[in-house]
Image (tube, rainbow, N blue to C red; front, side, top):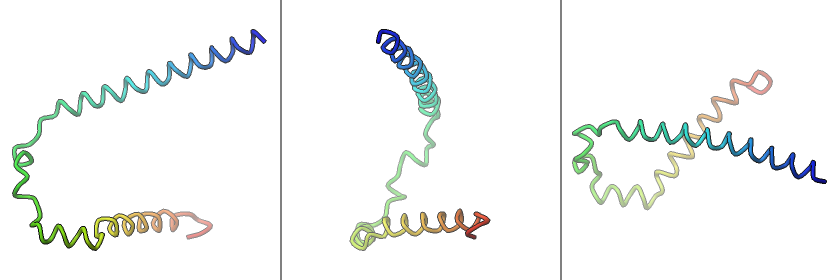
Length: 87
């Protein structure tokens, strides 16, 4: 009984080490990405915004959701056609 509890504790410790390593890598990547300066043209996004009428039209007809569904369907079709048995 003691052996199984010890073994479980050792496995938990090893998995925690791998999780800590992964979190450290991701944190390092976030720090590096946050150090990249924002371009001057991206700071003033008022010129890149859509007029309110067009934004309402896109939201009312769920255009962003439709574009997401269509693009994911195209990607899935592309991937399925690459399978030798199906495509």
